[in-house]
Amino acid sequence: MDLGRRLRSRGYRLTPQREAILGVLRENAGRPLSPEDIHAMAGKKQPGMGIATIYRTMDLFCELGIAFPVHLRGGYRFYEINLGKHHHHMECIACGKRFTTYEKPEINFPVVVKKDGRRTEYAATKLRGSFAIALRKRPVSTAQVDAAIERIEEQLLSLGLRELASSRIGELVMRELKKLDQVAYIRYASVYRSFEDIDEFKSLVDEVRR
Image (cartoon, rainbow, N blue to C red; front, side, top):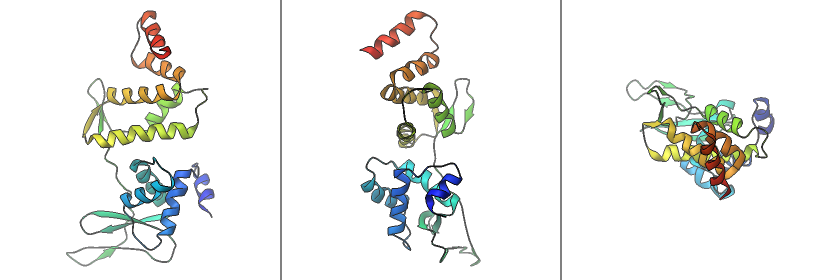
């Protein structure tokens, strides 16, 4: 089964970014690549692609069996395309026992701290849900939403924080929505900022019109 079919069978699309990453893996078959290696090479084919996209795509490719992780001493993780001809093992330094590993790459997003103090793991599905509600029946493509979410995730990763207030994420969502669609921005902002009277709503509309 080709990659396009395999992705569609799991409800995913063969995006230009995924195609570029697959091309890099094919061109370097038999050579372990780090996420940074893949990012540098795939970025030449798809400029503007973020490192978060590399991690998410490699997570998906490993899950589908398209690629597999290669673990080296020191905790470094590399990736190879799965051609069905060979595989790699981890080796225990203490006992010499070898075993195959299939761990997924970990992305260390900050823990989200809600207004009431509760803490929860970051979930891209919740972020995507916020965009879906705000953009309902608006002329914005899935690719545009994917790019917006990627920019937000890049910023979250670059902060290097262990915890982050949910309000910070909300502000990032508003910033992206403002660039995507003014109606969606007003929808989201009016709920997020909990407007209590018509004057606050009018001020927001005036802000967008300026």
